[in-house]
Length: 288
Ligand SMILES: Cc1ncc(COP(=O)(O)O)c(C=O)c1O
Image (cartoon, rainbow, N blue to C red):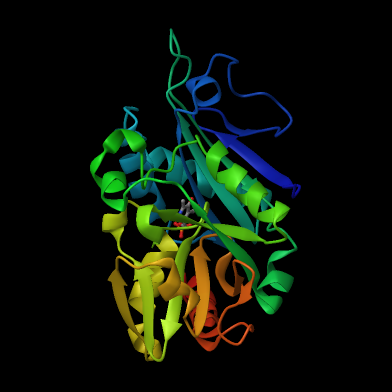
């Protein structure tokens, strides 16, 4: 398990709180049922990347699990106050919005700042080993059955963490979920991409995946870098036959995939599209 170093904790209505201090009740829905919404973004030189997009997605997740709407302005002020006071430069930023205790509780929101794990850059340089894991449902169901919570960032991520643990047991770094008939979905914490020639392929949102903020960035940036994007419903064998693959996520950014289910992917080395997009992401983050 990677140790996440907490840099700061700020709670709505209270402001900065000692991270060692408890802020949730033991009967909070987030803890007892995993029924809370969350977001993770990355802070670059004191500026959270696309915070408004993350807040918009937090509201969508909250609505999908019957939580009251989070107050965006209050979250923005909380984050800005903590960043300024603690002089935080680069960090991960997790926003959590819970309805509180099921009886007599009040909604609670907090912002948790953590250090960026040191392992990301070495992993970007060597590329990830990934295994695919079936989840046994048709991809159409993920989008059409709202109770399955496809595409929702709720705190019920135990299955996602179990998938990463399964990948590690197989000597891999990460996993990619497959719907029935080996339809490629997403990773436990990432969206998935691959390249053939100048075309980037990624599963479309109709597969019930999370609408990643980094995925959106890639969709916007790709044409300017000379890549066209094809969103669709694709199989594992299409991914396996790619010239290059990578994942996208807020904290790990663009991460090359060089090995899939025991075989080299492409030429087994990090590819040019992932590198170009990674540079473009850093440029966009620097411009704020
Ligand atoms: C299931 C899942 N898919 C994709 C992503 C990537 O989304 P983003 O780029 O917004 O971080 C995440 C992020 O945590 C995720 O949990």
